[in-house]
Length: 357
Image 1 (tube, one colour):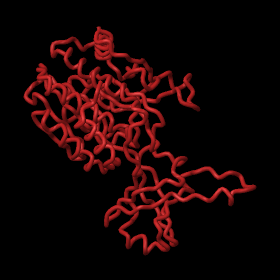
Image 2 (tube, helix red, strand yellow; image 1 turned 90 degrees about the horizontal axis):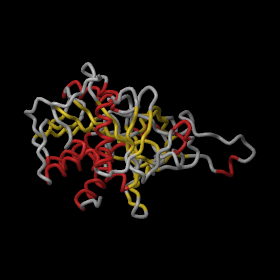
Image 3 (tube, one colour; image 1 turned 45 degrees about the vertical axis):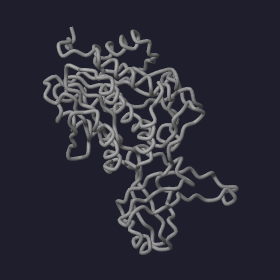
Image 4 (cartoon, helix red, strand yellow; image 1 turned 135 degrees about the horizontal axis):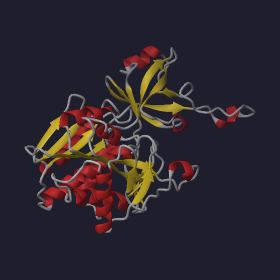
């Protein structure tokens, strides 16, 4: 699938805009502005989950969903010497923090800082220190707590990485927060294709970009109760397990470039999953399979367990280096996820049988 210039411009702008858990509003505005021409109506809930609706009057409702938030840090403690200690906001990885540049979102705007780390020369003949929440710290150039506060930095300020989007070898998209703003991009592209191809669907379609997934699927949990869908198709990322130091016997066998990953899990409804697989086969869309033993760890679980049980399924995008600032996804896979969701929607009928035999 070849991406249009306007689509790539949206993706770059969307990814480069920080959208940490609990503070997703800037990214959500960009997302809503993009999908506005392709839907009949846009809604936003109290915590910032956004959804565009096609056919809002229809009784039968189908959700396609991604999550909008990215991992980040909170300012947790400021020393008398002006150094900043942090706590996680989502699954932030302390091992990649040392020497990273950060943006501290203070009351006076963004302040640059760095995660400091002792030089290799000073660690000779010591047990090699391991980055931990207790020993990583940010230096913003201040020499006192008072000076830090004068910069507008206080406990509770959000901290993000500024790493920006680029394409690698015409094969990969690379950026922080592809988990899971690439999902928001993919569902937005589905909405665009339906509109531009003048497709008529016999149900209400809710293109949903949820908040707070990284801290417990909370945005999906809330919006599922608001929309009360009949079907939910969720897209998120999963691990490319072909990179070093990943155990396939534990994490499965998925690879960037080999297609969307269709999940098997207790929260995944058989009928919806088989519809997705049948669509992939009939449309010759490459796909992979993966299993999750208890939960998928994605918004699929929140939708599936809401409202007395909503038939839900998960289409994942293989991704390298999750929760780092150099997350990578295959451009070809992104196009195939878009195509698979799009073609699956065209097969859904309100009268289809959803109950187990």
